Image 1 (cartoon, one colour):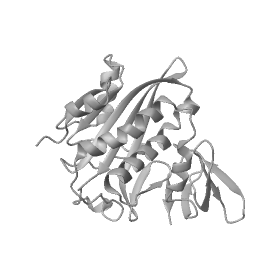
Image 2 (cartoon, rainbow, N blue to C red):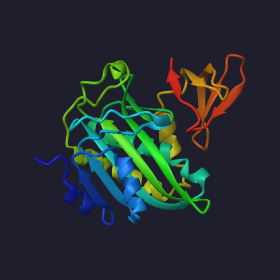
Image 3 (cartoon, rainbow, N blue to C red):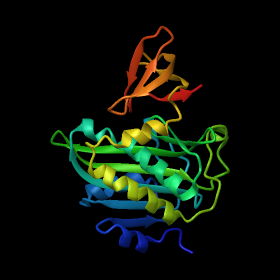
Length: 252
């Protein structure tokens, strides 16, 4: 049985070109190459394995063969960067909703872009903006979901987990796309925030983050504002707003 029913995805999402690779360096990298070669999108790139899966802040995303969903959506947009910046949180909401719909598992969102289950990261998101003429012209939205991945490298074993069940990957991709595509077409819409807040695995928790001087600070996550930024309260009662892309946080 094929890993994905690409014909079904093309039928379900008219106008979305679907590309599958048994092995690729990174679905995000492939999307960028095809965009630069003239593909405008919208397009979906799926891979059975990534050998150079990309994560945020230059990190890699472990992507062994056949055990996860490795996908990228190339979406043409014309947006101010401030609106495009919401795409990461919107994608997190779409992945969260898709996982909940297909599995019923109690996943949550760790600000800004990770999906957690039982205290471990099961999915990650990397959104890249393609900018020209001072505007974001397209978004490259990468999603990695650990479905049955179990044999993690030693440095990931305490942090990474998976859905832990074999499932129809096409069904899960479809569920995520049904949530994601409308969100990417309406970047200015804020309605995603209700779910983003209610699904948060961070709000109310003590976290550490690295400030602009490179110093680790501890604070309590108290709010997600209208732009999707995380508001934290320091021990002295002062509040600070953390913008996505600027920091990484760790739940204590």
